[in-house]
Length: 131
Length: 380
Image (cartoon, rainbow over all chains, first blue to last red; front, side, top):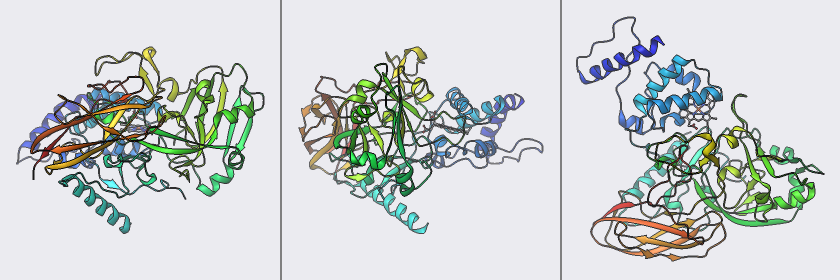
């Protein structure tokens, strides 16, 4: 629960940092900074690799499927929370604080304000054509 | 690795060329949009939908889980279809058994219930299919009714519970289990298909056998079909009792729907898809042909109307051959004059059902069939 209550003021700080050219590094003992929102990268399905929540995403959200399931959604924070709760019913191993922090993280990047993903045409995958 | 990267690059370049093309030419190259790589969910490109039969190398792919373990050769020799439950003579059929029974061919559209999910507002979670989670194929195999005649179902058997060989990664994840009522199972067009467009099914399409439930949503077309349980009641498994449900009376967009007002989806709904124009295209003045496909659930397509003035006036398109469950190709000549133009197609089926002007929003984003208005610019 502590992590969530810290998340909001911290996010305000990031927005400030993103706007100011003279942003100073976070004081020692604070969680690492959220990377600024890079729309072009998000539209192409790229992840904010340096975000602190990525450790949890990499550990939990790649077990059953790829993270492209995550990067193509455009959901509000409550809708993200519901989806991540569904994943725990499916077998993702997350406590309530982790669910809340992942929902806030996901909604920061992949929310309804962001246009739909851009897709590229690729050859059919392995097994698509008869032997 | 290098070859794949090169291929991807050149195909992407081709797609780019197509988007900027001043005419309504369309790419003939095989290729799909990779919506998710694992499990594989690939959508067809819009320009696929100019032909009655969808070519195999452009046919969409939908998976819930990773592919079943084993290559085609192993599966061909180890796979069995067990038909059991409320039946006097339950039996396991091998691939060889099935090939010795009378084969039938049915042409039918396979469409993922979630086709168009990515077009709903408010947005809904799930694979963000837009236009391409559908295709029309000729399916060849054994009538399910013929298999049921062999196993002799009890009078009490009212539902079939269906399972395939695919498995979730973790035991806790609900397996993909579906069900159809006995009436649809006994319909002569419902088949256990071994072939698609005259070729053995590929692994991604359910080799060695998948169920074909013409006119019904793709989630009933169980791939790698391995077990059919005859039962008195409906399945209670997650993907039948909770998942893949549609509101009995759809409400306001975004409004939650209580579970008791959700029922399993069955039939597809009437729909058309323009293939040769998409939003934002820049098109040269002159004569063009608007081409696309239309289909419905258990009804033939009666008409497709086209507007090139944003819906003020509609003209009937020329229709090619029809079939009980397949795509019906439509064509419409269009004299493009400079300016901004809004084009749409609207299909009507034999029951009189037609496409709605507004999407019928539902919590999981199923059965999108609203008229699509495509805005293009005509200039030289």
